[in-house]
Image (tube, protein in one colour):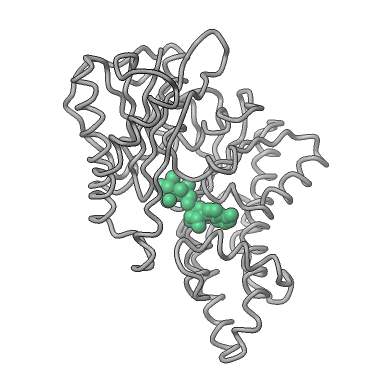
Length: 347
Ligand code: ATP
Ligand code: MG
Ligand code: FE
């Protein structure tokens, strides 16, 4: 079965082709991405209306490109998958509308995929895919969750952030330091030349005994430090960036280890944009190596939003025997949609 996947939940238009077959994990044939980052940069963040309009411009050309790259024709597509939520309503509606139009034109089923399930299953796109069950650390721009994953659609929430997401903590701290949008990668880059112990920043809920996170206090602490430094900030920016990154990463790593202890599982998967962070990878790898725990990440380029993970999530559901959904082209989107609401059989 050939699955065409379309991602349009935020500021990235992604399209991909994934094929199910005899191997246990479906295969990525081609994918293409258009990032709107440059367009939104002038505004310091994503402008929803501009995002929707740009998705409209990009989806079909990207679809033509992935078909050409794979040497296939539209008529070869068996299922069309799109991101149904969570995300920006207008942006989601573009992907949903176009996916249904393509599905109706080709007379094939259309599948609404959960964006976070896409992130969660994105390590299956790598050369060394994980095996179930595993702990998942989902760290993206809008979410920070620890899950127990027993199979496709079998997700148990172990803990999550009670306020800001880890990506948001990176982005907001970066904004305070004047590093632009999206700040995560910029802050990480600046941190390389700084001292992570230069500033004492809070590690909220580190010893709370549960698997929840809180990052809202961090940006306030960064702001307080920045104000204190005044005109001296410029010179100390790398130190403050390094200290901020160290605080976020320490909490993520310690809570991940606690989740492994609590579940007794010996495997962890990291997914979402913050999974691209080098310090997080280094520290988690080191801690897990000591414990003999396997760590899996998506390819660096597939940590942030992309179409491959959406096609993959639908393909893995098909392969797990969920059965393709009916051919009905009345779509809806779910801007808010908790991942635990998914079941393994739902189409
Ligand atoms: P969600 O998936 O929760 O809806 P999203 O789709 O906006 O949110 P992603 O695309 O998964 O999130 O990730 C984007 C986030 O990842 C941003 O907050 C960005 O700053 C962060 N990020 C990306 N690369 C890095 C990095 N190297 N270090 C730290 N943060 C990073
Ligand atoms: Mg993004
Ligand atoms: Fe995302």
